[in-house]
Structure formats: C-alpha cells, structure tokens
Picture 1 (cartoon, helix red, strand yellow):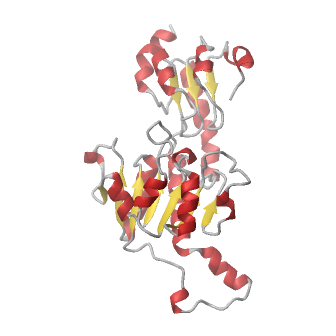
Picture 2: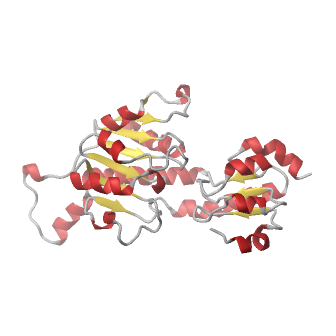
Length: 298
C-alpha cells in the first residue's frame, strides 16, 4: 500500500502505471494521476486494482493473460490433485528410511479414475484443468453462475453450489476476489462437502477461511489440501496449517514455469506500448473503458 505522501511524486505525472498482485492501485492513486491512460498488471489477476473506478475514468487496464500463464497454472493444479490422491511423499519416505511396505489395507494412494472432480469457478484456468482431466474417465462438475452454459463443453456438468460441495471427491478453487467470494469457503461450506474431500486452491487465499479449513483438516472432513495462496502472504509463521502433515503448502509460485516467466515481461511491455500509442492493450480487462479512453487521450 503506497503512503499518501508519495502518491503525487510517484503517479502525478504518470501516463501508465504497472502494479503487481502484491501492490495496491486503489482510488487514492487513480485520483492522484490526472494523466493516467492505463494500468498494467504483468500477471492475470487484477484484484489489487480498482478496475471499477479506472473504467469510469476511461483508464484501460491490461493484464498478462497469455496462454502460458493459465496453462502453467492448470498443469500445476492437476499435479497437486494427483499428489493429494497418491501422496508420493509417503512412498519416498518408505525408501529413504527403509520402512516396510504397507499391508493391504494400509495403502494410502487413491485413483483419480471414476472420481468426481469439482471446479469452483470456470474461467481460463478452471477450463484448462477440465480439458486435461476430460480423458481420465472422471466426472467433471462445475459451478460458475457467470458462465453461459451454451459455451460449456459436454464433458463438464454445470451444477449448483451445494451439489458441487456434496459430490466432489476433489474440489479445485478458481475464483477471483470479490465481495461475493471473499471468505466464501467457510465452516458452513466445508460442512456441506463430502467426507474425506481433497481440496486445492491455486486462485486467491482470501476466498478461504483458513481457520475453518484447519478445523476441517483436523476432523478429517477434508482428507488433505494443497494451497498455493493464502489470506496473508507469506503465510504467517504461527499458522496452524504449517504444522499439519496432510497439507501441501507452496508460496504462490507452484505454477511459475520458466516458459511463462520469460513471456510475461514481453506481454507487459506490449500492453504498455499499446496504451502509450493510444490503442488498447493486447490483453484488455475493461473494454467498457474504451469510449472514455478515447476522450481522455485527446
């Protein structure tokens, strides 16, 4: 969060400003930047930007919605789902510590085959995850009230939220942060989920009540979880999640493949140069600002 006393110096003469997912572009900054034509985030999410106010003022918002970005995250999400089902860490421990192999009923691995995977949110990443799992003989269900069902492929069954919770053996979260989704996955939501569900969140930590998740993990309601994002980042040292052996925790980099990291700066520069040239960025978030943008740059 930029302090008030630095806003005029930093943004008073800016034509374009770039913010990461860890820096806040709020209404104070936008009001202090009379020349601002555009705001760019090099990655996909723009929840740290006041997009509504930017649109009202004719300021274009661009992001890094390159294919490599959402493909890498979908691959990483499928990987986490597999890890929760098969738990390779236990298999590795057997070898490293020369432990005996499990008896018949002690085997911990579970197949994805014929399981139900639930997708909470069906944007680019959720859709790519579904595409990758489509050939795995799984039931794929999804909840997203903002998706036109006519554009959803036949192998995805759209369901209501309670049905998604009740039927999912594996639940993947692909939500942006809004007033509607903030804290949405709370104790009540976990209570509606199938006993022993596997839970994966690679979207935004603010949509999950971490205390409620910790309780669900302790009780076994959630068998295991994989989290790449948290309410506060980095995850606080005293978080109970850090002490649990049925949780995979990564510091918001699980899908950061080299191929994508090399492409993101190129996309950001292209977005910035387009805005400076008076044309929309290649990856435009708010097309509703275009008319006022033309007036703004006259």
